[in-house]
Image 1 (cartoon, rainbow, N blue to C red):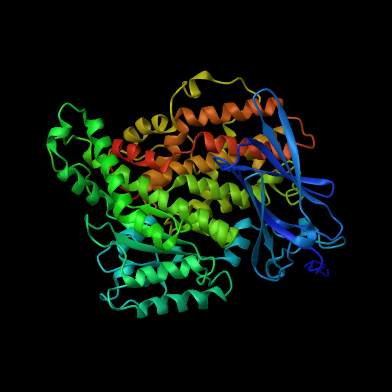
Image 2 (cartoon, one colour):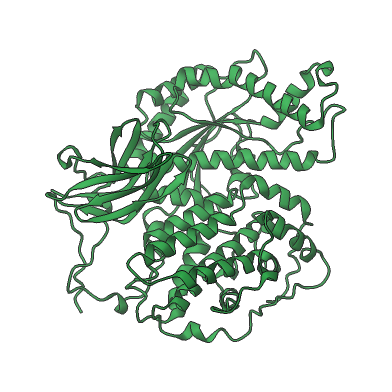
Length: 632
C-alpha cells in the first residue's frame, strides 16, 4: 500500500513547537493560559513559579489567514478576568532554520514563541494515508533520540579545578573520563563517551591559563563550527569551571574575561554558558575557620551554620559573582558545586550529622546546576536537547519526572482517552511503548536490560492489577496526613535493604500476567484507570530505584528492592485510592484527555522526591549489596 505521509512545507505557514510565558516581573497574577489558533485552543501548562511553558509535538501549523492569540486568565482578590494578546502573523518570521524564537512583551509579561523550521517539521498524515493500526506502535523517545541522541557539553577549566569529579557525579559514571589526557593536552574536538552512560558526550578544554589567550580562539572556533551542524552534533551547553579563590585572589584571567566578553557581545551565539564555582564545601570550611569564635558563643548548631553560610555568601558575591557579572552581564548564570567533603569540620561545633550535611549539600548544589543547564538548553537550543539533558543527568529525579511528562505529552499521555494509535491494539502493545519511553528517560546503567525484561514488565502489570477498580478504599493502604514521600519509603527501605535473606516480592514476576493485558484496547473508565496506574506506579518505582542504585549497575536484587519498597509503602495504596476516586468522577467527555493528563501530572508531582531529600533517605538505609545477584 502506498504511503501518503508527507511533510507540509508551505512557505506562508509557520510551525509553532513551543510557547513560554514569564510573568515574574508583572504585577498580574496569571492563573492559566491557552494558545488560540483559529477556532482551536491548546493549554499552556505551569512550569515552575511564575513561568508557564508548553511544547507542541508535532508543531502547530498556523496558515496565512489564521488568527493566533494567547488568552491569559488572571486571578484577582475577589474576581477573575481574562485578556487576549493577539499576534500579527506578518511580524513573525518564516524560517528554514532548525529553531527560531519570536519574542513579545505585554505589561511586563515576556512571551517567547518557539518556531520550528522546515528542517524539523513533523510528518503530518494526510487523508487517505496508511492507518495507524497497520503500523507498529513507536515509542515517542525513538523520534527524540533520532533527532538528538546525546546531550553534548563542553567543560572548560584548569587542571585540578574538579572537572572530572563534577562530570562523574553529574552523569553517574565512575571513571574520570575527563582526565584521560595529561595536564595541558586536552583536545577540544575529542569526544568522551562513557560506556556507563552513553546519553551524553563530553568535550574537554584546558581552560584559560595566564599568557595563553590562544585557547580562547580555539574554543570560539569550536563553538562556531558546531553551531552550523545538525542538532545531533551541535554543542548544547558549556560549563566554565573555577575554583573559588581566597579573599584577594583573582577569579578571572585575561583569557576568561575575553571569552565572557565574546559571549556578552553575542559572537558565541545562543549557546548556553553556565559558570560553575567548584569546591564550595572547602570554601565554607575556610570561612568557618576564619570566624571569630567569640561571635559563636551562645549560638545553637543551626544558628552557627546559618551564620557561616551568610558570611560565605557575602564573600562569594564579592570575590566571584561581582567580577563575573562585570564581564558577563546577567545573561550568564552561575552555580556553586560542592566536592562532597565535610561541612563545618574544623571547630568545636561539629556534630554527628556532618557526613549527611556534606552529602546533602553536594546533591543540592549539583542538582541546581543541572536544573539551570536544562532550562537554558530548552530556551536557547531545542526541546529535544533539553529532554536529552534530563535523560543524561543522574542527579535530580525531579528532572526525570519532568522529562517523562514532556515525552508523554507529545503523544500518548495527552490522548489516552481518544488516542487513535491505541484503538484496536492489544493492551500489552500499548503498555509496551509507554513503558519503553519512561524507562529510557530514567536512563539507568542497565547493561542486562532488566528494566525492559518480561519479568519486570509483569511485576508492574500485576502491581496495577491490585488496583481493584471499584472496590472500597482500604484506609490501611493510604498515607497518614503530613507523611512525606521520603518518610513513607525510608523505613521500609531500611528494613528490606539489609544483607539477610533474598527479597520476597508480594507480586511475583514469574506469575501469569493479568488477563486484561491481552485484551484489545477499548476505552472505558476501568481501562483508563489502569493506564494511569501503570504510568504512575512505574515512575514512582523508578524514583525509588534512583535512590537505592546511586548510578551503580542495576541488579535484579536492587530492582526487587525498589518494587517491594513501593508496594509495601502507603504511597502505592494512596496512589491507587486517588485513581479510584478520579475514576468515580470521570466522564468520558471532550475534556477527558486533558483531565487525565492533569491527573497523571498531579500524582507524579505529589510524590516527587527533591534532590535535596535524596541524601536524607540514603543516610537512613544500608548500602545495598547487589553482588551476588539473586533470581527474580
